[in-house]
Amino acid sequence: MSWVDVRGSRVLVTLTVLALVSLLPVTASAADGDPIYFQARVLWIAGETMVVATDGSQSISVDLTQVSQDEYQRLERDDVVVVTGIIAAEYNRVVATSIEQVEP
Image: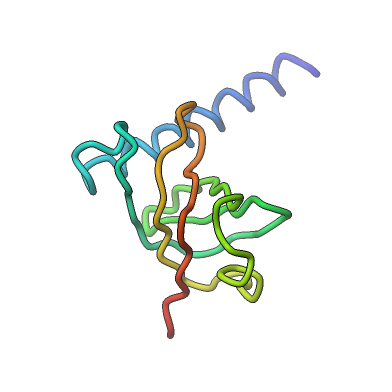
């Protein structure tokens, strides 16, 4: 792995953290494990991870391990969803507790 690859990874992690921090005004104590929620557009789903984009084009990694598979198995790219969950202790993803598709 070259220095550029490492730097690119750090930039990606930093942008993800900034995206998550931008969600904090939604709930005053999101860092305390209180639920947060936000609306976003599905970019991709692989295994138990979904990446979504907010209106500000920020991408956020969503851990789906706590969500029933039937809540996300039919989702496709560009579907609009409401994600409910908590910010992971590492601040690098949202651990979802619910995924709801917004009907067009």
